Image 1 (tube, rainbow, N blue to C red):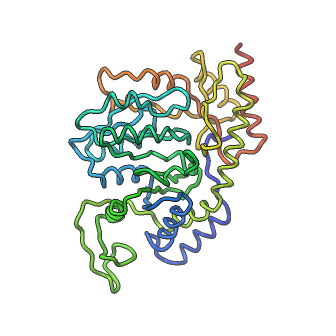
Image 2: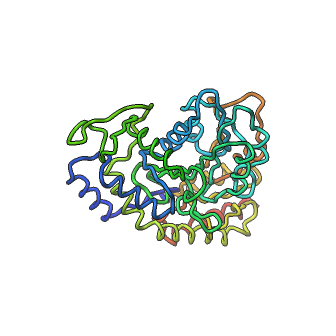
Length: 374
């Protein structure tokens, strides 16, 4: 089976985990702090807060910004449900908006039409790793006094106008789960430019505990045993085991990104002339692709998916729009471009465990399906 997504781990990661085991404390300790510092350098970010998942990152960021029960937060419907669940977890109402057809970024004109007096933030998604138009996002936010929380779960290593996503702007959230460009097994991170916000998130990720300048965990032990709890908090800290894996993976990030771009460009080149198949118009000089998505015309997406599955090639649909989910559905809401995209999008295999022969097999089977159905 050729997997659609897969992390790549090896002996170096195992050695790092073994060293973390030998330390004897597996919660948030020195490796977590080292991982934060390494992310800060790699991304060029003023502040980094490491957490236990990308979903936790989104929720923690929104919570720390004071988003709550009377508020609305706008996000594109075509994103993983984690984004909408994180908004809902604050008590706020997620407001779905449409996407544009080229690389499926947030449609800012549609988003602006949905702004009300209750809107507090906007969560643009860098879908498939392709950065959305951040200048336009920030301009929209400035016009309406909104906070911007970038859902950068797909975009680790991507750049926007030469700067790494997450290294500038307001707030950005990353995921390092088992299939992302780099993995910690499970983890996430938040970047921001506001030092006070970063410090608040650091307290909130360990149950609101403030160690009063003392390093280490929230536990009551050692010389700095006193702590205070002055805010709502969560158990969102990253473990040293996961951070140890992430540190090794971070050293491989540029190589991973280069290989992903190589595969994506090969798909683009060899699928561009296939009738009924349209790759997204992604600029791989800036995008560090997490997934590779094509649009399949003529209502034949599911047939192609079945054809590839029969050939041992796993695919996916990324994603079911949130406004079509029972929990987030709103009567009368129609997002035409999102719904059209949902009927056509197909995610092909993209990861660094793919061989050149694997990539050739995917291309050949896509072409074979199309040729057989002309």
